[in-house]
Image 1 (cartoon, rainbow, N blue to C red):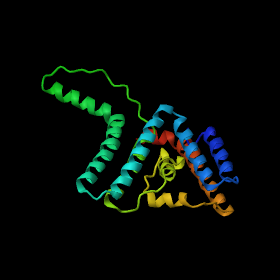
Image 2: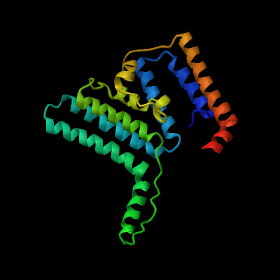
Image 3: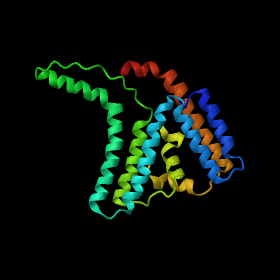
Image 4: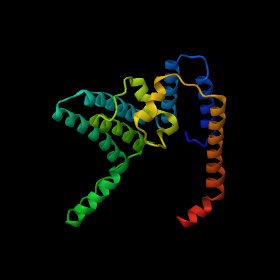
Length: 220
């Protein structure tokens, strides 16, 4: 599901209506979280397991890092987060690249090694959500902020669909407080937000993809 598609516009409209109904704040957050999972799973559902793994592991590792006083245990917990996030990122994003370079290196030394090409599909947004959760555990290691108390708020922080696949990478203090207390946009904020969204779609669909695509292809 891409932002400049009719299905996303319908999805966004439904979520906007649901979010402005008279549900409790917790139910609204659950709706947003489920919608974010639907948004992510629309392209390739099995990859949502990676998103869950990164979210759950770093939520509990981050909490343990903040509370743990033993230096060796704290370093071990940080290593677990680093290996989990960077290992996952390296395998899916750089696995083929690393294998090709390894093959070239051993062939340079006269070893006739030609493995089968790996059929690795790159999960959408994996760079953004792995670095988001990794930033969180590093912040907990340095105790720059307090751990997120609610798994619901942390999950929503990681998977919030407006920035899940395109960034930016944010830290919990920038977003989590907005989930902790009920919020409702004013009519002015709603108008401004829809204007910015419409302007972005105009720049993407008409200017970038239509008017300037041939020029960009020619120069790049």
